[in-house]
Image 1 (spheres, chains in turn red, purple):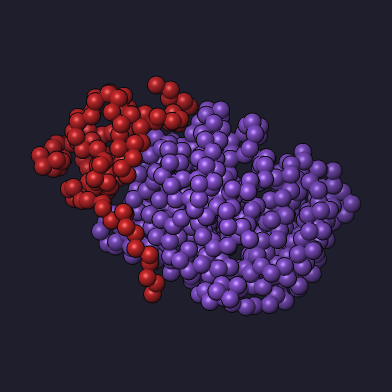
Image 2 (image 1 turned 120 degrees about the horizontal axis):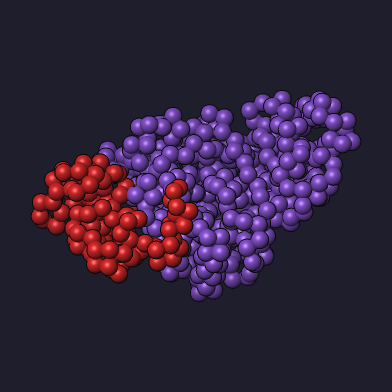
Length: 114
Length: 406
């Protein structure tokens, strides 16, 4: 019924593997779109990779190894910095990266500073 | 003006005497202090499902709250107003009543202390509602065109899927609504921290770009003082790690149109196009968190004239709102499977490969049209009418904020 305005830059999402997508060509993390079990084999960067932990939908895994201080890139933009070395295919979350702006908080710890 | 008349017809609107056109015909019962809340609720219960309860809990005066109350009482979806005062609170009830009446709406005021207490005021309120509804039912109908439509968007309970399905889907819908001539509002500058650079590039001119950067800087200062970013534990459970990550996902709700202006709560967009709503108070942090939960922002977008709200959620919010319908767009297919009764749109279909982003954008757009025509959204049908109004303070917007104001 309606001709929606063409979304240009938005159609570059790449399916890396059935359960992982790359949102932007410059990204160094992949997004899980279907649950991955620990021990499950996936293909990341052309190589077979065995998941060390379960990954839930919406969570990130490293597209390639990341060093302390590296920027984590998602949507083609920096979303924080790496706080401890991350292997390819490893879960990228609160335990190994942090905000470059305001610290995130969880239910158990009101303010995670470092 | 002749050009404007050619925009698309959206709905059979309710024509208000002050020129506004609504998509709903609501009567609001407003308590002016928490002490009048129970009495106002009991009165509103007598008015039926189109009588909505709103209110302000505070006893101390606040200009923002007064202006918000007035904007809400004269919203295009509102056909009549009943104010309920305890009697001793600070809210300037006489000016709200006078301005509501000046707008051509049926408006009455009950003061509990003068009326004889709880029972007497509930009874008097029932009778007042009958008079107000008798007048509100007389409202004229006329076509509401795209250039008269205002749509707001918010995300709540975001997760790692929000920014790849529901939010860009709303962005596509916004692009189409703006192409039709409508005004679209996106907000929560505290959730745009990290996006200020890319956002400023979309401003229609340099002056507005500077205002946008300054307003996100203000949000960052404010949230830093509060000690928390706008980032809830559920966001992390859902795969989001940092505020700037959440921001990038939230930002995609704004679509790809140019940004025409920066407004503050209660300001009405002066024409079609895309507007950023600055919800973070001016001055030193005084009254606590800028928005204590999603409904505080929804109320502010409604005060800016939003006829309806597009609400994206990944973790699964259930809220609706008083006054304007809320359309829920679920980003996460697993959440949709659990909570489909609360969701108007399954944007998670993008992730399961059942639809394209383009198709999700089109279904959100079609839903906007059908809800504007009178179909009830899920939250409306379930009776959700959440409402929050708290203390804030704002300076008026500067001239650079609305470059095209007539």
